[in-house]
Image (cartoon, rainbow, N blue to C red; front, side, top):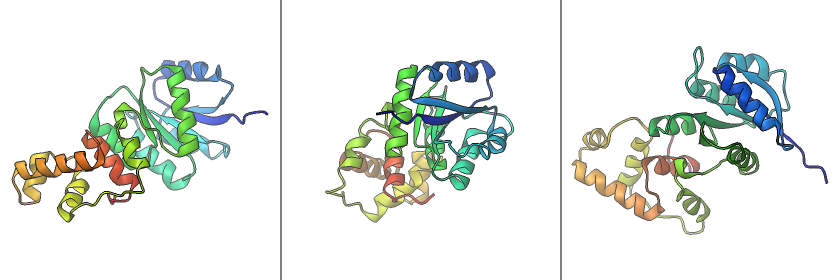
Amino acid sequence: MQNQSISIAIVDDHTLFRSGLASLLEEFDEIEIAFEAVNGVDLQTKISRHSEIQLVLMDINMPVMDGFAATKWVKTNYPNVHVLALSMLEDEKAIIGMLKAGAGGYMLKESTPSDLLTAIKVIVDKGFFVNELVSGRLLVALKDTDTKPIFSNRELTFLQYCSTELTYKEIADLMNVSPRTVDNYRESLFAKLNIKSRTGLVVYGIKNNLITI
């Protein structure tokens, strides 16, 4: 039985990295590189000619139109196309920003080609890919839908603020509580969801429609 290959685009402004990655991924039978683009605007021009595209590997820092704006544009205009963020930054703000824009996962550029292949296959199959950057504990929280945890209104408010760039101290000020109380909200959510990072909380909130973007 012939496995259908996955048609992908690579969007990155570094030509050497982009063409090198394309060559590496072409080695896999499961992958078909439809096109490469240097930024979001270039992607907009090219994707209209490639209706077969299933997934875009998206760099974040690019001139003209960056990965955040390009991902949002893809998800608005081509909602069935998946986006996998590919970055050198192991940065919480960047991860949250890309997930909020609609990316289904986040990989570092130093990942091996086979790890990248796994991520691509999982996103195309399931819609999102969870790894240690997007909280390894999250799968448990997502799978465990039978016993939905109960949240207080304050915890939900705190969860909403977590998806912003506010510091915990700024969140405490906005909620008119002490930083210690905000720590308690955070620890309570960590415990209920078996999650250990702010990013993990945000991903959980987005996937379960607890956070309005």
